[in-house]
Amino acid sequence: MELKDFIGEHLLTGVDFETEKVKESWGEGYEDSNAVNFILDGKTYTAIEDPDDGYRSHMREIKESAAVVKNVFTPCRVLGKMKDNGDYEKNEVVEFIDLSTGKAVLSVGTENTDDYYPYWVAKFTPENMAVNAPKDFQI
Image (spheres, rainbow, N blue to C red):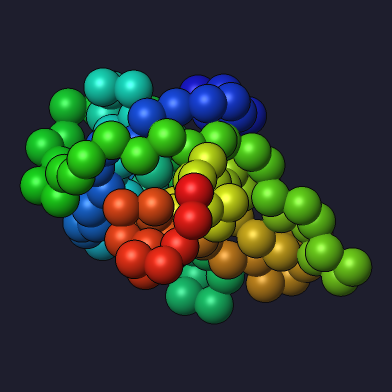
């Protein structure tokens, strides 16, 4: 599964974070990795970080999963789109934008991919959801 598979309109109904044990990319042991679970269109997906060497990190994988998401909420209509590249960095991040507020609710992937120090992104911003908008916000 690739981040571009999430481009388009969806219903986001849950997001939570956890730590998973994953096989080290450089040895035979296991290490703790950050993970984000989210429910999109009734299916649960898990994105897992590869902590690499402690200075650099990136998204190891994203997959459909059987994870139980505890933080569920009223469906939020979102548009999945790839994050734009900046002047000095390239990104491989999918952003889920609330269709009412126009703000990013969930971002997942790797930023700064063309540099010596790429980094994992898993950001949930519930205050950007229409349901959490100030009372004077007009949809």
